[in-house]
Image 1 (spheres, rainbow, N blue to C red):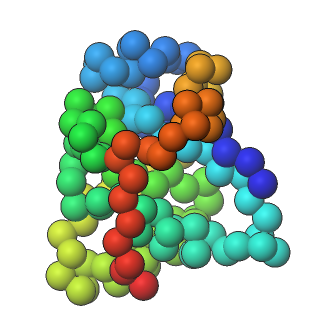
Image 2 (image 1 turned 30 degrees about the horizontal axis):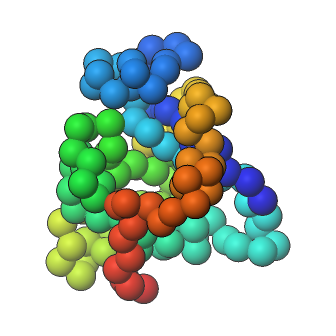
Length: 135
C-alpha cells in the first residue's frame, strides 16, 4: 500500500541522514512497508527481500559500502519473526552464508523528504539494483 524510507535499529532518537551516515548511531537505512495481507503475504515479502539484495554481505549494498547499509529484517510480532527465521534457515540450508540480522523492530524514524521516492524524483533506475532468484 505504501512505503517510507528511514532509519531504525540504533539508539539515537530522531536521527538525520548525516548522523546515520556517520556510522555512530547504530541505525541502518530501512524501508517501512505497509501492505495488504489479502494481496501479498509476509512470507512473500520476506522472500522478495532476500531476492532483491545480497544477504551475504554485511555492510554494503551495491556500490555503497559505508556500513549504514546492512541486511536486516525488523519484525513487529512473533509470527513475523518465525517466518523470517524459517526462510533464512531455508536459504542457509542451500549453502548461502547469510549475514542478515533478524531483530525486533524498535522506533522507525522517517528519512528527510528529499530521500522519500528518491529514484522517482530523479527518474532513474536504482544504482544498486540487484535481483537473484532464490525461491
